Amino acid sequence: MKELPMTENKNYYITTPIYYVNDKPHLGHTYTTIACDVLARFKRLDGYNVKFLTGTDEHGLKVKQAAEKNGVSPQGFTDSVSQNFRDLCGFMNFSNDDFIRTTEERHIKACQHLWTVLVERGEIYLDKYAGWYAVRDEAYYSEDELSNGADGKKIAPSGAEVEWMEEESYFFRLSAWGDKLLEFYAAHPDFCLPETRFNEVKSFVRGGLKDLSVSRTTFDWGVPVPGNEKHVMYVWIDALTNYITAAGYPDDPDMGGFWPADLHMVGKDILRFHAVYWPAFLMAAGLEPPKRVFAHGWWLIEGEKMSKSLGNAIAPADLVERYGLDATRYVLLREVPFGNDGDFIHANAVNRINNDLANGLGNLAQRTLSFIYKNCDGKIPTPAELTDNDKALLKKVYDDMLFTVRIELDNQRFHKALETIWDVVNAANVYIDIEAPWSLKKTDTARMGTVLYVLSEVIRCLSIIVQPVMPKSSARLLDQLCVAETERGFDCITKSSALKAETEIPQPQGIFPRLQVEEKAA
Ligand code: ME8
Image (cartoon, rainbow, N blue to C red; front, top):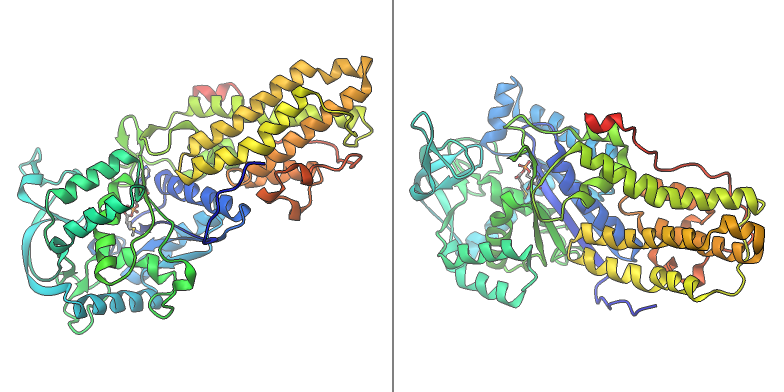
């Protein structure tokens, strides 16, 4: 067994963005949370004390306008839409430890405390703001960032319409933090991934930062500014603070040992807020920035970003109904290199499921366990002496697989982690064809027993390591091998936890159904 990297702190704190409640959750939101769920489950199985946070972002003009459009109060509106996101967690089998809403008392208290600290430290001051504001993005843009829309209206780089706004506003002294941010980036070369996006962040900061308007007076659906209730906080200072609220700020100075967060997972659309503004707010308040921000790519539909405003969104429930929950989770993380944009193509999903799950892992388990069930009295056979071929396959499983997957996942390379696991699946399928237990049945039953034992052991370890991605299917596989619940952690991917020979197994059931060809045409 290769040495595990030593970690001084066995806590792991991972967060999703908190999602706007102006509409139903779609595949894009689901994707981010699946990625976090996989990492949270992986770290738990790897012995970490995990805190996995998701939630909803409920303030701001956009939400207020959506509530008005629906003829309900902002609170009534956010209560019902936030519940959709909470329900999604159950439906997608997310293992989040907390679900935060920015309208909760604990959060309002944390925002107001942070604000007060920033004021006391001279980081926030009152002035006047005039500029082009996009309600859809909840952001101001400078004149040179805008283009002209078809009807002569000015358009932000995101495609949102902007309007001229003038208001008294509090400002955060972001301009004073440029050099300190650059120093922080230099000292933490892995702070932001993928690297290309980190480079964009650095050049944005090098270009010079302006002070940031952090309060609004034009609407009241937000956290009141302490001491000046004409103002509510800018939705991003409110939203970003959720990450420390959930860790226990301000009451617990140690934040339960969960700060700085290990990973904020976000889409590339909101990287600047997380990699520039958030670390600046935190440093200004005397708090540490998070350890990493990963900005993944977008799911596109025919080249356009999938989004609620464009009306082209895929509903997660549709995919789950079509492919099953675990297969959906697998496909989303395997199809597109994590970090890149990807077009969701059903025919590719069907191929992926049939090749990797039905023919790959599913077939490996089904043919091995059915063969044992029929030919070995339903008991895991006792192995005889191992050949070099047996040892080579087991070495991959015990020594190399987890070691490599750990490195890939610590860099959020989900596709590479799965590729590593499927290299073992493929090697085991090659092994079974070469060793041909069905022929050994007639010539050498002792050797047949050894081959089947080695295969069962490989399937046991594969089932353990795929748990984060496919929790339900892997649990069924482990049940079929009679692996106890307490023997499913990554510390059991070792020879010393190997299957006990002569264990009686139940009649095997197929785990990954092959999808019908006609679904390809859909
Ligand atoms: O920005 N592909 O919330 P939001 C992949 N409230 N991921 C996508 C996606 C797509 N087509 N569309 C959305 C907000 N996402 C703020 C965040 S955090 C302190 C505040 C995912 O509801 C992706 O993670 O607009 C993106 O960053 C997030 O949803 C935006 O969610």
